[in-house]
Image 1 (tube, rainbow, N blue to C red):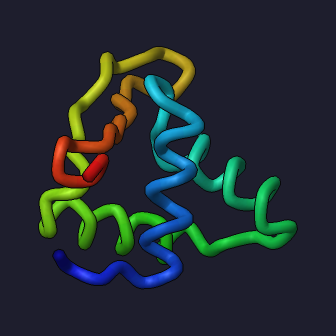
Image 2 (cartoon, rainbow, N blue to C red):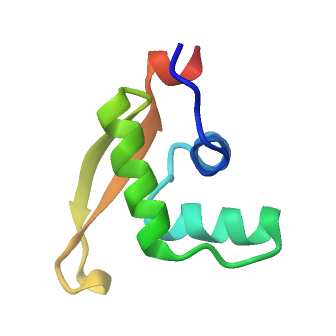
Amino acid sequence: MIPLKQTEQVVLLAIVRKQPDAYGVSIYEELEKRLNKAVPMATIYATLEGLEKKGFVKSKMGQATAERGGRAKMFFEISGKGQA
């Protein structure tokens, strides 16, 4: 089994808590609430990218929305490997 860094562990837990609405900002808000400190968005996205490369999370694009200027959200979910 691949050992996880503390940052990877807390991001995985945030995804579990926010599913099925786990995307960058909701993960940020969950981490800020639970850790009582702000985690830089760059750190969150770098961690999500690393977790996806390791096979612990999967990403999928949501629908584009007018409130986001026509941009879509990237949603994350825990994979089977991540649950193990």
